[in-house]
Amino acid sequence: MTPTGRTLTIDSFPDSAFRHLEADAIVCIDVMLSGTTLVSAVAQGRRCFVAGSLAEARRRAAALPDVCLMGSGEDGRLEGFELPDSPTSLLAQPVARPLLLCSPPGTSLITNAAGARRVLVASFRNLSATARHLATCSRVALLGAGCREEFSCEDQMAAAWIGVRLARQGFEPGDRRTAALLQRWGDIEPSLAGWGNSAEGLRREGRAEELEFVLGHVDDVAVACVYRAGEVSPPVRVASGTDSESSLTPREPVYAAEAPVADSGSRL
Image 1 (cartoon, helix red, strand yellow):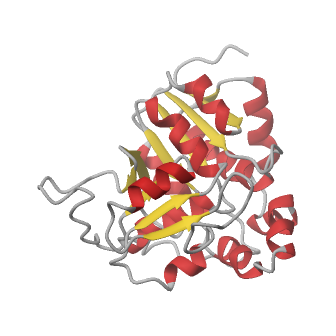
Image 2 (cartoon, rainbow, N blue to C red; image 1 turned 90 degrees about the horizontal axis):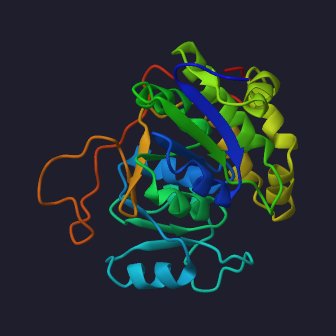
């Protein structure tokens, strides 16, 4: 396949970011759960930061007053963290508390992509907003974090749904694999993500409420989430001296007035 014009490519796993650093934009997708947690934090107006390792998380936490340190180590251990990676737990925290998330492989994918021109974070919640933000790009990479070195169906679903929206804007698949993934996942029901390995893992851990949250919040956030200098935020920042770690004033919450919360059986 020799595509012309603007292209989109779907790939997987944290190390895939290094293959796509020349793209105009990399979209990092980890539906269960780090991407959902970060998008939910931005939607609340909460300041949110990403750490690539536990050591970095501890260092940055020391400089962030009243930070909510959330996540786990590479081995899944929770020592040193206040809470596990959890969008439902985050909603119970005061919005004034900034989030610092270290939750591989999702956050590893984000930090690996840091050298790209533009890095976005996406989940089921901000599909359309992400696609709209990419409209001016020529080459886009949609990267899923995966789960325990396996492909995650929910990440590929989100990538395909964003890809379908980009195709409507004139983008073409960058390779045959991307074309096949768009065809396979582009028109599938969100509820089917509940049958994947990541969903089963959440059930085994007694965290079914996280799965319900993911499946019940589809395309309900009207803002793209941009990763820059360790922070995930809306694309447009207020030009002032307050946008720093030392001044952690919450932003205005952002939700999609035109996109109600979806039930788990709805189609996109």
